[in-house]
Image (cartoon, rainbow, N blue to C red; front, side, top):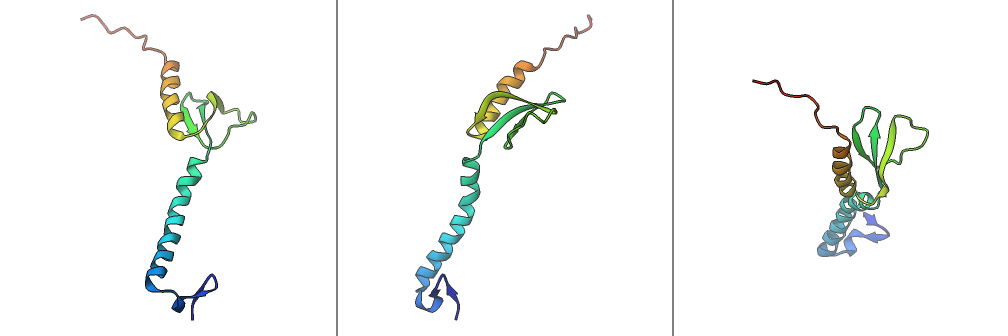
Length: 101
């Protein structure tokens, strides 16, 4: 006879067994959402000038990236919005002049 957490399956009604399975699946599917919601995000500029949103805090030892923007962002969306603003400001306007026609 199968048992789950010390409770035999035969002693559970079908409805309770279905609810237990549903709860287990819901917990497994909810974990990644909670994990990303609790994560911190950073905005960095790589050595080639590209802005990136990362979930691993850059250290002073890494010479390939420079932390820009706020010290830490609570969500990736917040960091992405700031990246659009900060990286747009960093781009220089095109200095080329179109030829006269």
